Amino acid sequence: MNIEIKGVQFINKGAELMLMAALAQITKLAPGADIILRPNKGSPYLKRANLGAYQKLTLTKSWIDLNALTYLLPTRVRTWLKKTYGLVTEADVDVILDASGFAYGDQWTSIALRQLSSEVGRYGRKGKPYIFLPQALGPFTRPKDRKRLQASLPKAALILARERSSYEFVKGLGVTDRVLKQYPDFTNLVTATHPNDFSYNKPVLLIIPNSKMLSDKNPNSDWRNRYMQVLHGAVEIGLSLDFSVVVLNHEGRSDQAVCDALQRKASSAIDLINEDDALQVKGIIGASHLVLSSRFHGCVSALSQGVACLGSSWSYKYERLFEEYDRRACLLDKPLDRAALELVIQRALSSQLPDNSELILLRKKQSEEMWTQVAKYLQ
Image 1 (cartoon, rainbow, N blue to C red):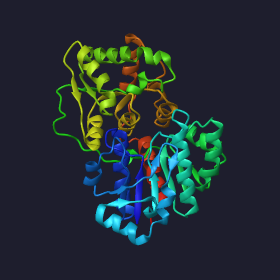
Image 2 (tube, helix red, strand yellow):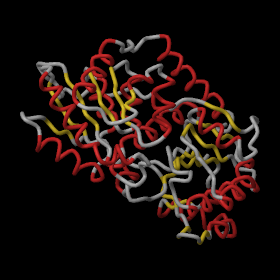
Image 3 (cartoon, rainbow, N blue to C red):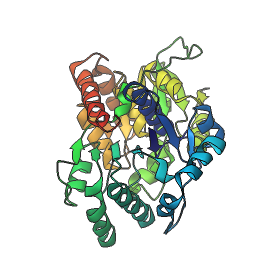
Image 4 (cartoon, rainbow, N blue to C red):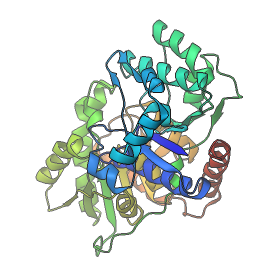
């Protein structure tokens, strides 16, 4: 069986965690299956090859989608391409697991939704399962996008919305509960690797920035204008409370400038970590005492491990996540001055859940149930 995992990469550590989570489950549910990964700017060839993955030959550019032509290639030619060059076409893929995270909605271009609609439609016509693993979906308000999605999404095998907002956005397109279901983020099942060199004499305040807080993708202009001020304030509060303050780059080049600015402006020396291994990134988060994260999977990794966590949001997906873990009061709705931020930090520290709490175990059980749904298509 050829299983493609779509939408993952290695630079964004949340995307890499989703890849690791999917690989772990495929190993159990479909042992012997061949993994297919497609190239993208965050997924270089050697990284894919090191996982033993076959390479997806995708014939898509902007509005042009020629992948339907791959079904015209003789089987012997496609077999030769796979065995000789490790190349696999859409025609060879038996099941696609879409783990894009947050790639489909009004914040992104119509090109992405047009390509998605074409692909889902082809899979449906060929009787091959297209499965959206839990992710944020929507909103979808552009008329042409809605028309395409209304025609294509019902042809998917499963659409697993990550939270209530995404569920309602997709349901509003006419997708029935036969296809559409809701499950939490599935990286909560990933076992972290705890790095030996992450050791401090004091409790750690871990700060995970997100450059999207400063971009036009963030509709909140107040956050765009004051985001850096809030992060600098958090650094100084942590130092004043006798924490070891550490900045973690969760996204690579995109967040590097923000990380550098925090380290440079701090009144005392603070560490900056650029860790390449997503499992160690989750381990670093789990070994911290308090996390302030603007990266979604940074928040998931903290909340699902029982680490006190504050979040800042540029999308509805953060609000829904903190509600799922009954921590809505720990999500910053607006920039706070230093005194108000210190109060919220103290609140987070006093109300954290242990990693074996009923709520955290429930979310993990829901993720296990989700994979039971997916397993039906991996036989």
